[in-house]
Image (cartoon, rainbow, N blue to C red; front, side):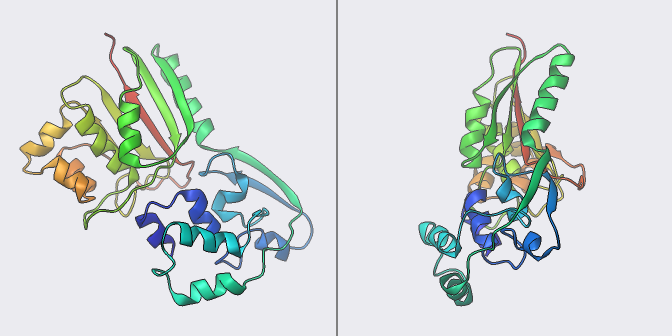
Length: 265
């Protein structure tokens, strides 16, 4: 069900609402099963709503099974999921009440502010434009590519979505990078997008870094970057253009970091 939602561009908040009510542990159920008071130290990849971190195994969800069913209805997925899922959501009990404390020790906002601070330490102007990046990956990439002033780096953190349009290989950061490569072609801009967990989609790449010549390099390799974007095959195109970022799994996840660099005018 989760893979289906990701393939249909369901926002992470909606996807986690469904996951909460298909689990025996999420939505505070783990804490309810534990003896005594539970204190949670959380690493967040979902922004300012701690109840959504890992779908909240130790925090109250604030939603019920009817909310999860409404998500599937809103995104027109009721007929695409197994009948047992719908039957469960129609009859399941709401999550139990939870008492405890939660402290977010790391998240995307901390990561992007740290990146901006390091850029400034190196004498370059840096500006964080959002710590709650969301929406369609290719549209948001085109937006961030236009954001910097000359001599500035603009940064964003969050998680976008992708509408899978073909049988290709990629992830939301690679989709964003390929869209940006087309948007900044012929300019002196540089765009980077990567997952802090080192994994973007079902690939071995964390994301990619592209510039005004990347789209041309992809074409020179025999791959049409526009066709690759339209068939959800960003990984193939970016690999052909030598643009992929490969770090291997980092062991943690505080969402995605994006940045656009504009040289001095």
